[in-house]
Image (tube, helix red, strand yellow):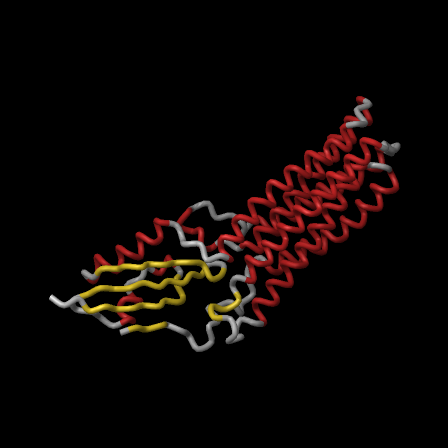
Length: 301
């Protein structure tokens, strides 16, 4: 016999406001305002590092706008029956798109920095430094707002990872790093005459940002492609079923369908099979499985 545990609404709690949504909106507003100030100041005072930081913040403002839209879309379409497992993967899709934007704007930064090496311009260091420090302060505040729900270091908590929030955090972290690089470049140029360091820092910051974007691309794409959950979690489910019921599991699959929620399907071989609900109740709660498809085979002895 076979049972597919389709819930009639398939919402799985995805219609609820996620912890990071409101803070992401606030950080979006802060980032957008600082972006405008830094771009205008970079153009006015001739600092490539400051202009690069402003352009970079612009990319992050766009990316965070995508994150905010993803939160909204996922909530308002959570009950849409066209989505087999709800809208949880909108979260990872938005993170993937943000990572692409991150890499694209980093490439622009490299191009502009190389152009400044070839065609240097005069830099008004005092004004540029004030704006750069302002950007660093805003980025630090934004990181504090987003950091609370961003990190899960335990492998067993891997399925709680909010890729949307993670992408917003990485964008702000990259902003903070580029602001810091801009400050170092401006101070070096002002006091040591190292004018070349300004465009150089733009390139270094861009390379670091590309590296982060690649990591986010890999992480979010694996969820979009239904990557199997870690072996420790597969083993935990298998042992919970087999040791409790003296049955045997084959063809076990577990994958993430949204932040903090997973799905599983497996085949049970048993001489004395129980009901599908009995097996579901044997699954540890900390695996956060909200959907199961169970196929039961009777072993004749």
